[in-house]
Image 1 (cartoon, one colour):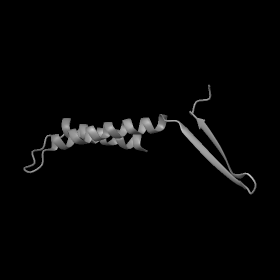
Image 2 (cartoon, rainbow, N blue to C red):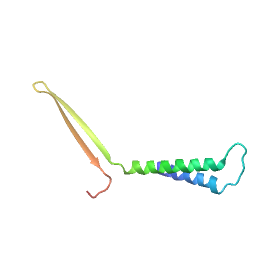
Image 3 (cartoon, rainbow, N blue to C red):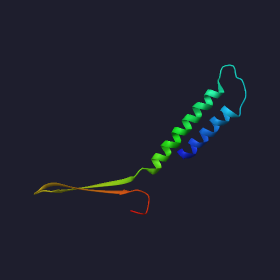
Length: 85
């Protein structure tokens, strides 16, 4: 979703900068377009980073043994998303 939102913001900003030729008294549409293009690029990069990061799950099991005390077992599984390892 963030990749699509980033592309949409970038396109809307580019349209405001390069295609719209309207003079508004209190608003600079070129600056708004550049801001939207920058925000779209940042959101797109964040979406790619979140898509590419490794996913991991961690499960913790605690068992209490009256004689020996507490025993903690920790298991972590990491998957990178690609099938070749």
